[in-house]
Amino acid sequence: MTMMNKTHAQVKKAAKAVLPAAGLALAALLASCAIAPTAQQVDEAAQQVLKSSFSEQGIAKMDRLMPDASNQACSEAAGKPLDEKLAKSIEEANLKTVKLPSDGKYLGNWAEGEKIAQNGRGLTWTDKPGEANGGSCYNCHQISKAELSFGSIGPSLYNYGKLRGVSNPASAESKPIVDYTWGKLWNAKAYNACSDMPRFGHASILDEQQIRDVMALLLDPNSPVNK
Image (cartoon, rainbow, N blue to C red; front, side):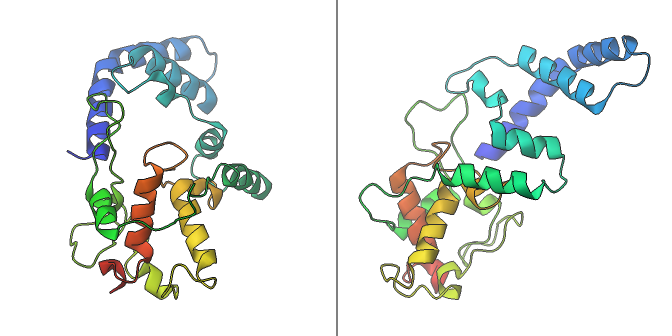
């Protein structure tokens, strides 16, 4: 079971368990209002139910229910475009969190990067602290041509480096794409305020070496992605 599937199953199980409580909370809210409750009131009631119904287990802590300012702004937008100034401020704030590779090396081993892209495990309460997470990249993207099962939430990444003219990732000409790709993997909200892409480095989902390996998968001319 993938990381995303396990999370979805956990949420469904928890939701079934708290439906009676949610009904009571919302019923109380409706009964206390002379007019229909606002969307904000319903949201606050739902948040109270979630907070009272979840408990810490293993590495899954309560802080997962607390969005940071960037996620909160996008959640409140409810799928509508953010105000341009707000979106820019979110991107600027997240760009400041991007940490460049400590040794100056951006690319690792593309074969290891492929394993990370295929691996959807991690971040559940049954995982032990310190265990390596997967990136679950194929859940959202086409990457290698050999993989027939992939998601379409994100754009295809096949020929990612080739299409961008990266024949030598160490060259000065390639540096803008290399820097952008690293930043995108580290914190996608630095380039798209309400990006659905996990903030792999910022959220400590992948460590620095794992990000190097995924970088190699995308940019190494010898990677099957660029063949």
